[in-house]
Amino acid sequence: MNHHETWVLTDTSKRTYIETFDQKGSINSGSGRIDWHIHKERLRGGLSDGVDLITVTVGNFEVAICPTRGMGIWKGTFAGHELGWDSPVKGPVNPALIQRDELGGIGWLAGFDEWIVRCGLNNNGGPAVDRLLDNTGAEQSMAIPLHGRIANIPAHFVAVSLSNEPAPCIEVHGIVDEAMLFFPQLRLDTRIRIPLDRSGIVIHDRVINRRSQPAELELLYHTNFGPPMLEKGSRFLAPIDRLAPINAHSQKGLERWNIYPGPIAGVIEECFVMKLLARKEDRQSMAMIQNRGRDLACLLRFSLDQLPWFTLWRNPGALSDGYVTGLEPGTDLPNAKPFERQNGRVVRIPAGESYESVLSVEVTCDPLQVKGWEKEIADIQSTQPPRIERGLPADLTPG
Image (tube, rainbow, N blue to C red):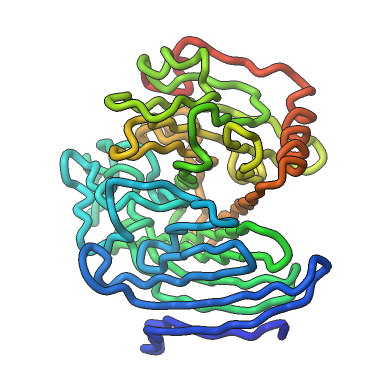
């Protein structure tokens, strides 16, 4: 494999656009020959008309990346198992069809069917009214929609590469600008790496403040799972420092907050917010979802220096309504932005500087590896017991 074999698929500054791309190859590793395949296409028809999709296959792992939707991870499969969920929304949906302000600011949900979708960059929580400076410098009340804008902005630069650094991988590089005149000008520069020696992805994001003034950042990785990962008896595991329900309804689910029921029609979503523990030597933390048999699991790894807060979203409704759970590391919690700012969790990026975060996602169907991940989490948790709060802490939730 060549170190920097790169194909530019989109570069609007040079009027470069490749609609269809296909490359195949193989490498020899310690476990034998591994085949890889990169395929790019533009979808036609329905809600997906005009959407670009890049599908990368490495051995028995496959991931579909959507440059048209903010470089989100649309779907994945591993050893025949679906990674992601079956949303009532059948996408990927062209952002041109999304009305973010619809129904009081929750129009984002009309495009929500990804495995991993970023919420941000200016805001990542619920719809709210915020105080912002307009083009005259006067403070105005302005509505901000659910989960922000980044997931509905197409990338203006996309390239795919074969690389040997830091290890053999396929890299999908994308650049997305979330910008308005007189308002924040944030650039997402993402490198999504698919290792050739293991099953999973590494998302390395750099958010750049391109304005001459400081900017605020809220970034959350909404990582979603349905069947077969999610089923009756599936478990969530993470080393917990502090955990609390986000509202009164979620308080009722505290007794079995990390054990999932099967699909139940009419069930209302629950949400738990938490501060995790990390390894002392490198500040790395982790969170895992595993199926009932503990022979299929997905592990998220991230640094608490970059993503210090974590949210667990549970929506165990009927299959047809979107039976799903979300594992969500973030720079803050998905409360309304004014509340997060009040509690000191909104990141500020100085003019011309950037903020970086790395999220590693690994999958396995090896029971021994699942047990190994369980032990990693247990070893971190052994430093202190979890603090489970039954109330609604005033610093974590407006209730």
